[in-house]
Length: 375
Image (tube, rainbow, N blue to C red; front, side, top):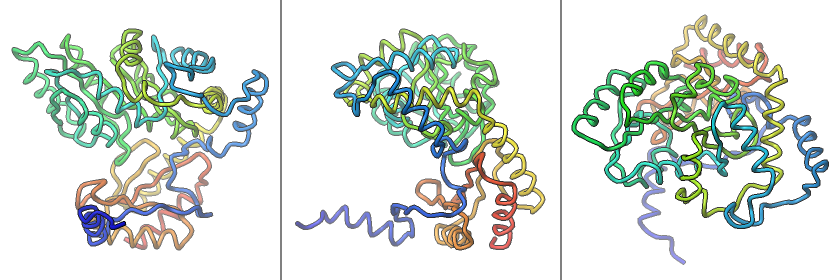
């Protein structure tokens, strides 16, 4: 069967631009690439505790058996959602199968026709996809620019009774930086019909339960999207918010309604990961490594985007150029991935370093010394 010509042309165009994506292979390089910031994904202790919890609770089941509205709402959902709501100081939590599902489900269903979505121009692709499915109008504001955000809020609140949803990330996945959430919250609180939504995917675990709680902003946020596949090393996501929001999503969020639920094992892993987060010294070790990385990159006069998170990015323009430097680092035993256009804008290609609790200070210094040599 002949492959569709238009699809072939798109693949060929990616090859010409040196931006064709390929699946990676497992290797033994020093990890500066994965989202396993605290090392929980590789934790045998967490694995063993999860298994024992399932055995002790007679939950030897491989799958959910159906969607949560049919047969898949097993007892662990109730246990874990109550745990999440309590730990995150939220009225309720609603678990989704992934962060992508949560963002698609929220933005496709909550903002209504005639409403307005204001989103940071560097917002994650999953949020953009959800916005595209929405009947609301959407407009971007400049990255982390509170003045531009306020101007747009004033523009759309004048003589307009529509609801406005402002969405940003507490830690941006491609830059590693954070917005001034306190200033944004103060701007938004001036208006009764403006609702603040924050994606905490890359903050959870790195900054305890996220930057919203670290800044004591829980009561000012309409919805928080948290994901478990980064700092907690497992799978799934949740939307934190009011009881009314939970009820609405259960009834109208299609990515929640029309999918098989997570397995008991997936839910148990989330539960145990949160318990591990409370007692682990991985958070302290990670923060030490972040400070060491910043100190060493400054000493070596490397040009990184300012970040206090686990994500640090060095802009190296051009897909071919950044791929070449990434390959040199990999040849020296460091797993560092290039981020290419069109994932980021042309001329904003970069090397993305993800730091972990299990990286040693010597490894951090060595990878930066090599980078300084290659650039």
